[in-house]
Image (cartoon, rainbow, N blue to C red; front, side, top):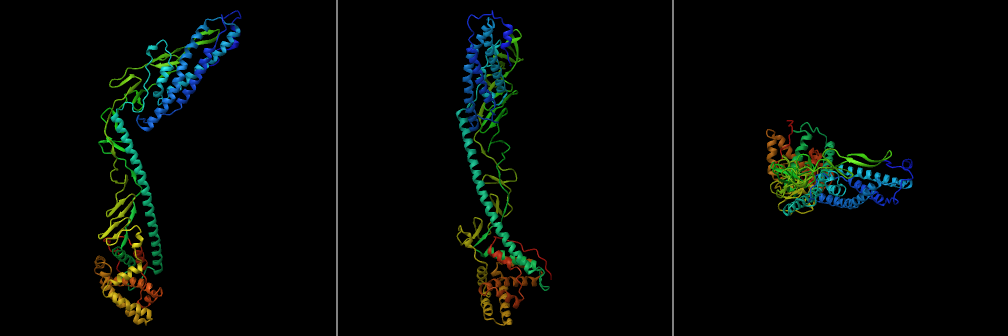
Length: 589
């Protein structure tokens, strides 16, 4: 309200002969003006607050918000008490002033004070109107507005009773409070478990990435060796060079897995885990837990079922608040003029609202059937416990592991977090990321359990009855620098005897699979056994004599290092295998 009383207007309208028996004391008006300004600032501060969604008394977030609002509401109540007394004094004084005779000087002084008073009154009205319009906050400060700022008017009997302010644990008996606390602790424990699982998952992914990096380096080395060797092979060979390499590596993988004291599990990533997110059809999800469904007319919040709000109300946790503003501005009409200047106004309210001092208050409706409350403005919800929650499940088609959900692993693999690890072959003991020989202890430094490719080749060769006798002769021929013919004969003896001991020097399973894969190609089967014998001999001679042995071996036996890189990689990084199929190859003759 702007400039309700101007000194200039008083000067023109009031005669000097108008006299007041005593100079007008505007102290009450000035005091009310100051208090209304203080109350307006507090109301503006509260109106700026945003209420959290889904507030449930008894939960930490709900209790904290309620405590904060109680502190702010208390400040508004204190200001309201001061305001109520000051308003009564000031308006009593203004009623007297309405019929008084004032001098020009007294009128000017009174006009300035009344002008400021009306401006403060209008500002407080606007602030409280904005506060009432905040639906989320209104239920928690309704008591302050109704009790201290609604001054009884013509329909004072229609002004509703003070609205209840929800507090921590409102509407909860001791058992429900305990269940709610247990559910919160259970969810907190699940959150901690998920954090620990995520940490372990990150470590598992790191280990898998390091292993994949190592395998990629070995593969690159093998490809370089293969590139040097070429792919066509000799016209007389029963298989192409690339197919021969595939068979050599297949044999070496099977031998390394069976003969090494430790082999690495084959593995692959199955993606990051997703949190548990599904509940059975007869349960509801609340937070991280599943609870029995609430009966009709109730909604669940943790272990508590709360009565739903009727139409025209919204939930504020343990209460339902009417979905209408508690106050409205109404229409102000002038009731006292001095000349053309309005000195006092009276309030007219819209339908459903009663005059209440500065503004119009909502008339309280009757409490709906099935609910309780001091008035129809705020209804206390009924509630009952539905038991402790149970952990959620994974969605259909997912597999749970350590509190997270993953795609199921392929057959023959087992999941550990985000990695699917191969199951250990028969005769091997599970040992973390690998499988250990049952005769060897599973130790933390698994790399110490793997022998070098050369040592493994020599150990395997020494297990053969005739090949073990043949190798010294070959080595002696190379050392002595025997003629090419003598050296060739020694190599041929070695190769023939190695081939005879093939099942013993590899595994009976590999020998049987090779025979089945080469069925109808007996010459090819014999040739592949000889090629693998030359692979092993090349490794052993390189250890005992040096790299020049490989060149000599190639000269005396037409040996070409087809598949050597594959044999070395399989021996140096043995991957656990079981019943791996013979490679798909094309026989040239």
